Length: 126
Image (cartoon, rainbow, N blue to C red; front, side, top):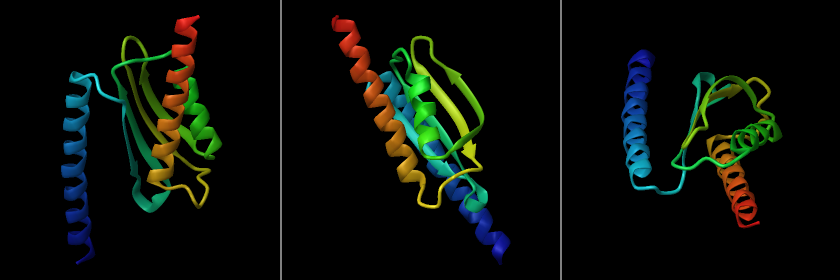
């Protein structure tokens, strides 16, 4: 019984992730605000974090990694591209504080992106 419930949960996750990927790809095509998805990994001991943005600003990767650090989130594995657009896929875990959940991680990443974008636009104007 537990195995069948677990399989159903995984199938629902796959559907949800496919929807998020489709939305993210659509958002990139329409130059909209960055897309951040956060999923709790098995056992609640970490997160899979995906960040997609049509724009990259100087220091964005550092800002996002600093946000992880402030949450006590160790980056176990990451793939990033910061050329014209910004894409980050990271697996974070290990030292996660008890009060950190998907929503907290997502808000921290979005705040890091906003802060970087705002400081980047200030530098562009100078």
